[in-house]
Length: 286
Length: 298
Image (cartoon, rainbow over all chains, first blue to last red):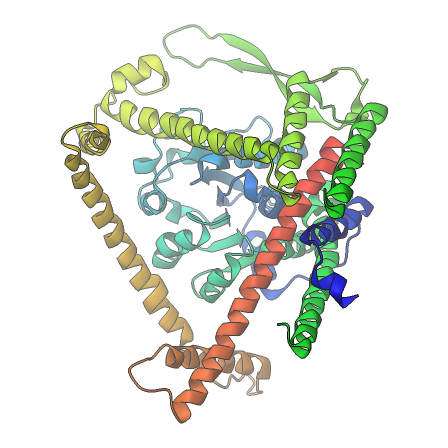
């Protein structure tokens, strides 16, 4: 048996992983989530603001990371919509524009009373700007130096939401969803930390250990990977039970089922790999 | 042919046939849309009010098929099939390198580069350079709502000249000129980053590490969880710094502290690896979710 495992084709592992992820996904298996301290801090940062506050939603990711980050962006959007906040969408990634559109579709389809036909008064899409951290430095000091027009080419002075907005130090909260550079760390380095802008972020698992030291002094809260997204969705559902009826509001929770099974499989494989290693060492072949 | 290759080829063929049969017999893989009429009125001061009508299309679940105003969207259905094909083609790399994977990878790289270039052209060159330097022409061509009193901002000639100098690199002679704008960009970026890193990552993190070992609440009782957390943070930072301190030999007490630092580093790397694994599984479940729900309709 051990000899078979020693020469196992790696494609069997891929097949096992496929089954481990696919079966819970098809079955729709979910597990209860308890929001952690960081997630509660994110929830409170959005929820404790008075209705109709101004929020910058910087969605710095692309379709390649959407599987991990779209549930976070959707949850941020739904939470802001429930609080009837005014939303300024922007991105530092060229491929982030369709990601912003997904959030705008949520506003129009799920919250038509507050947002449908209210472009410019309840939400605005500033689109993409090239320049990475240079753009952040500009928008925190003088928005119109970087963005003279929105994504449709409309001058910012002709849009009610941006007409009197000098810079994003004037907004009540900055929400960033990021897949890497430029993203969460740059927003903290050039935005939230030097100018004390209340900031919450949602980031990939790869970024999470880098962002953790900034909490709580330089960053209000963080959603780390799909686990953070699922906990945030649970926190929103706990406070707004009407969302429990919406399957789209449980994207992150649904993806935690495959996570559990895949992690159990991985732990098993790591243990098995070690057993084979020690067996080989005992045989003197390692 | 190896036995494992035969098994895998059979699995791939059977899986492919299964997917196609699900599509053919269950009629999934179609995208339906609802036509949403839009009406807008012009607000020009100089001409009489005009009303414009057009339609947008909102994607609806397949269950609404047959309802009034719901129609099959050929372009979106085609997009869905192309996306499903590309996903499967990329997954096929797990079986082994193959022409299908190479083709899809090349398409992905090409489309991403072209998309980024087009977006940057319209958002930067047109909006931020052309409109700033030639506002009169920009108003006629792309930005009709731009104020007629907008004056050219000649400062934008500087980035224009720097851009031209940067492109000089492609010229057969005098391509050394491209080093000047490059030197400017490198210098400016280094300066901007240095200040921010010093302020946020150095001073800010030092401030965050100055914390009490033992924490008491307002009524004087010991907050042991917070105290333990603070102690771990302080001990972790100090021991890791000792590990990277190479000016003295790691012997005696220093050796034990630096070993503790290694343990902290190992735990950090383990956490990073675990987070990365979680991220990769989330991406896999995202793609499978697309295949099962959006494409196959399971």
